[in-house]
Length: 119
Image (tube, rainbow, N blue to C red; front, side, top):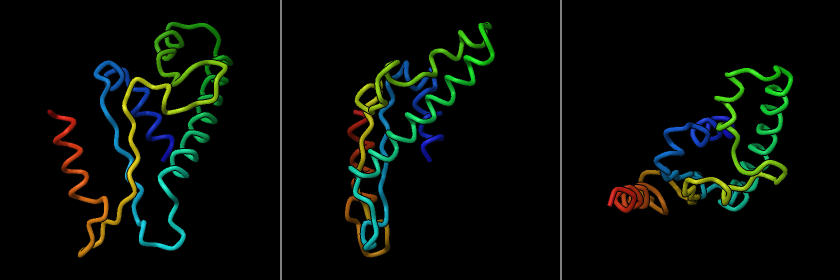
């Protein structure tokens, strides 16, 4: 979900290490499957919404040390709609079919991506 992805990308260790993230858009063999471009846009919209609600909650609490510590949890740029282009991490989206007998963008792609990231 967008909230889980937000938590990963907002994690200070993930940010410090600029850990790459791969989002797999599975079930591409289904008629109603969303493209990776559409999934990316939907996640950007949802993270933008989450970002706003989290900031409003922090603002309601007032100034505390915890607020300062959580200030780094804000993704992207204040006053600008969220985009994956604005995070330190390389976030990639890939369409796949993870069904026995198919490997369109699936396991082999992920294995190759991991090897590339680790090299």
